[in-house]
Image 1 (cartoon, rainbow, N blue to C red):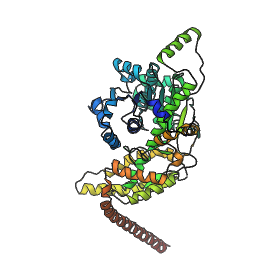
Image 2: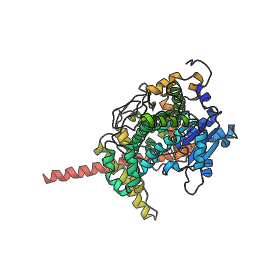
Image 3: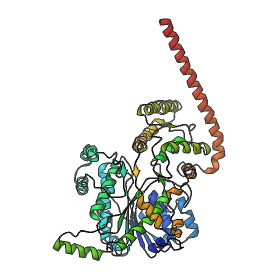
Image 4: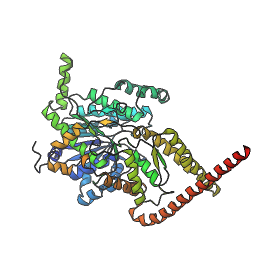
Length: 526
């Protein structure tokens, strides 16, 4: 392929296409929609699977997507963007995605490209719910795609940690010990309470229901999608935008974001992690760009390899199989591990040091104490830190609140914080070797125009700039603290600093006094 030209193979691939997206109202989905509408202007229509939520209609929920700051540039440059978006009612908890017959027919008649991103990302989700959303829905999407008459590409969004019990994770589909169809049947037939009792045995080496069900979902793709133009995309820990469409945008507290927000507000003081382990974090905009490029690559691989799968072709194959038995196919489902590169990695120690530095540069008015936190691998030290730096101050604070007739809340806050910390500890204490050959080969095959428009080279990522924007984004978008309050916050920050230092001196004096009194009494006794 001639890369030294101004053509866009990816744009050409999307021109005149209709896109179907599940999970479009989520974090990844918003950036994907924004990027497709701004960089792939030849797209005909984007269909979003949307469920009713909080008594809001599909139309209302679709309209609310565009209230987000990431769409401000799009709204200024394109007044007709809304005409290319259509919400379709559906629910991953329902059979067949909950689609009506008319909507299903419309999708199978006109959709060319599918991005399946819908998932429950709660690590502590009940197994029954996690199976229905993460596994059943993947099966339903594949079955829907088999009926599509003009299908060009399907991208199943997974996670780099689907097979976290393994030390080395290659760009291939692994067979799980659990049978996907049996699990789907169990989730359908066994009562939730009974399923909870056997969850730990079913998980085996997997640390939570999220990674387990995502691994089983990949197995569904492996077993059910032969001859479909499908690929699996596995991103690392997805955090804020790098620079597109705005720097530092984020809309959730998942993963390390909750830890940084907690530390920046003076709530979190200790984090259990291995400072030498690699923090496999990726910006959401680079992740989406790679995902878009992967959809094009899946099509190119299918075009050069297996015959193009259409509903007619699929039905013909099935008729033949009924007569002569299963037909073996060649070719593998491509897998893309979108992770940090070996030449430009960041350790958890560097992550905490850099974010602490930017926390001091951009203090928040929402802070209740001065930023001061550390990391440790030792569980005993971590638990002592939690007792003396979290629970003890929280207890004192809540007692004071009761004395002044206010509702105590800090102890409950810490319960939630510690639950979240326990979840991420598994990933912040370990190292994995992620193979990224497919992603790097994809980047090397792209034209210069596509490299600029759909940039995702993690080798070129400036971690200092990125983490600076990341912290600013947490302050602005999650803590709802505008950047123009920084001067006021600095004044308050200085007060908190001297309070922090005064408290340390007071504790030191009290400790010395107790030790002196103890040794004096001990010497008298002797």
